[in-house]
Image 1 (cartoon, helix red, strand yellow):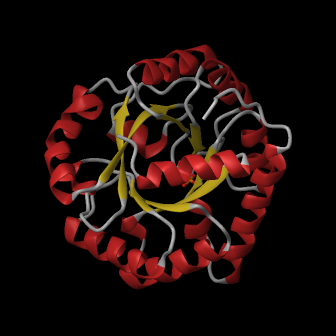
Image 2: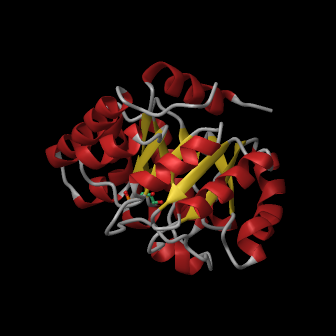
Length: 261
Ligand code: 1GP
């Protein structure tokens, strides 16, 4: 069943062409800094806040961070779990994600089986997502025991994305890894976009408006950035985000779009 947050995301993509989501890693913030960050990114018109990271964090700390963000943010807070410890009852929704190119069944369906009853109990909105690690893969590639898809093999990314769609997942995410030196190349985004009808999320290593523009023009529906706000302070956070969001807007003017929505 499609819930409120998913409907909001779909409507936003439909009306704006592509959207931006900010990722906050609970390991890198205090509840206080998370709430001021949330205020700043919302004022720059990011569409939602994802909370999650690759390495372990205490659930108590995660709860405090999510609560602090929820207190100030009018936009949805969506969990981006690395494991069952990434679940908090205080969020609005959770990417119910499977790391499709992991060599370890735990990251494909094991952690999900452990987490599902908790998600049900907390009344969190699960949004089914196929997660695909590409390029260098970063920490998430190592922790998730992924076989990252080389950038020069876009047809493999397309096959994985199609698999996500055929499994009934409603979003697909091409991940380069947080802080990646090179974001997912446009050729890979384009090839995935040509075959799938579900919205495409792209993230990892996007630091400039020009990179965001290229990724959207190639077909990304959602751009996720995390590192740029973590590395910046005060006005710099806003300047960076405004640049990225402007790039996304520019990208929509020539965007490849083949899903009916
Ligand atoms: C990581 O794709 C996200 O899961 C964001 O990556 O931190 O490089 O923006 P960055």
